[in-house]
Structure formats: structure tokens, C-alpha cells
Length: 379
Image (cartoon, rainbow, N blue to C red; front, side, top):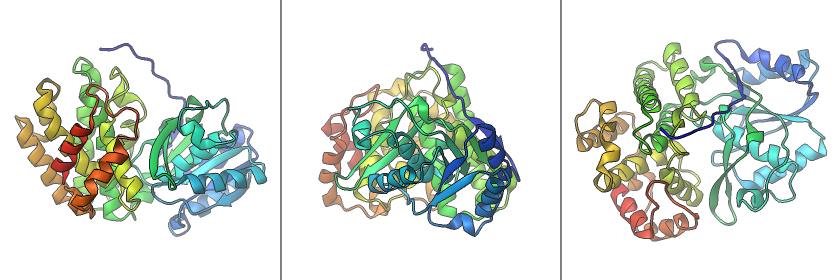
């Protein structure tokens, strides 16, 4: 098992009827003027907005609102929000939504003190301070509620890049699984696939991190089982709760302990896909790319795949791949690039976009030939 350091300062408030506690948490940290950042307005129909604003008012927290964060959040919207936050002299941010809203909030938090956020994304400048963050999670998928990373898209350059800093761990995140009862089925599936992909990005790196790998197997099995249950009954609170907590644990550091930071080739490939086609849901894209990556890598590094098929109740990798893709079909999720409306004549352009990343993969550094092979397998 590799040496590691583990740090996660985020306080989690989990369970039914906990959203009303957010105002007290913000007040206890002496923040008085907050930016409430949200998406397209669903929180006004499911009661979340009313609970939050009542809590803020009760605790005498002044707030201003910014709406309109979309899936695959853009640099342009982030920069607009930064200017809004500066204009209103906020001292913290409350992100209410899923990963896109929380990622946007992190970008705004660090960009608030920078002249050019994209230079930070390009690793050309470092962050020395950031606005404090709070979150109320409405979709379990990215784990952004309990980590320090984020992803945004530069629409002009069609680059979807990740950034992060220890300054960007949320102070407090509230997770009430019951507010996810009304999620569309595809969003539930995409959240589960995103969480599984986060775990798999670590899983194959080091087979000596036995404790971490056993945790990872349990998390993946739980996610699969809970999504199955929610397909039968979307109002199953126990399934919602266990899926939500699994998705948080999938990317709060626990699932990657001793794994040298993970591999992340599949995320890099998917980021290029959704940078060029923003309507592609991140989880759906990963559901297509990861099986193709496994199919390609299992013959190059068979020792890395000596037991992953146990997750699927199989005794070999090929059977496990078949089971994985069949499970995606059962859930109604895409299993090929053509299912995502990607044309075959676009693959060269997609490969070009992927190769813009400085490094692709960890235990195997991908060449363009590798990328082309995976895209063909995924098609």
C-alpha cells in the first residue's frame, strides 16, 4: 500500500428534514452576506428553496441570488457570477443543487480573488484564498459536496478542464435524500454511473491497497443494488439514502486512499466528449467510455483486472463486461457513442480534443493510438 495523506474538513449533515439547519451553520461561522447559487429553478418546486430562505432569514443571514447554472457549467457563466458576487460584496457562497452548481460555486469562490480564473485552470497561477462554501445537495453523483475539486467548460476553446484547491472543501454540506424522490430516472442512473466511475478511476491503480479496494467493491455493489431498487420504487428512502452516501464516499478521498491519485483517463476522454457536445450527461458519457477502456486495458494489463469481475458476480473480465453493459441497458442508459448521437466521422476531432490534455492516464500514459482504439471500441 502506498504512502498517503488524508484530509477532509467538510461537515456533513445527513438525513430527512435537515435542510433547515443550514442557516445556523452559516451563522455559527460568522458569515453575514451570502451568495445563493442555484440552477434552473427546480428547488422552487420541491420545497428546498423555501426551507433554505426561511433558515437564512431566521438566522439573520443576508443573501443575494444567482440562478441559471446548467449541466456542464461554463466559464462564461462563472465569470458573470464572480462579477455579481463582487458587486454585492458577499462573504461566502451557498450552492444549492447538484455537482454542476457546486462546481460552479467552487470556481466562483476561487475566481473571486483572481484576475483570470482560466489561468488557474491552466495551472499558471495558484490560489491563495477563496470564499467559504456551503452546499445543499439535490442530486447525488459527483461527490463535489465533500471534496475540493471542480470542472468547468471554456465554451470558446471547447475545453472542459478540472481544477481544485484545499481551500475549496465546503465548510458544511447538507444531504437530505428525500428531496431526490422526484428526480427523473435518467438523472438517478447518471448519478450512479458517475459515482461508479469515480471509484473505478482508483480501483485498478494498486492491488496492494486491499482495504481501500474492499471498500470500493462494497460501494460499487451498493450503488448497483440501490439503483436497481429505485428503478422499482423511486420513493424508496433507504435506497435513496444509501445511494446518496455511496456517491459522497466515492469521491471524498476514502475510495482512493493508497492509490497514488488514481488514473482518470476515462474522465479525461469524457470531458472532451461533453466539451464538444454539452448536452451529453457526464454520467452517461462515462457509462459508455469506462467499459470500452476496460475492454482495451484488460489485455494490456491483465494483472490489474484480476478480481474486478467479482463485483459483477462473474469469474472473468469478459463476462463482467457483458454484465456491466447489460446492466446499463436494463437501466436505459447508453452503451455506445452512437447512442449518444456521436457520428463516426467525429471521432478524429474528439481524439484531437482529448490529446490537448497534457497527460492522459496514470499507470498507462495514453498515446493518440490508444485513444483512437478506445473510441472505436466505444462506438
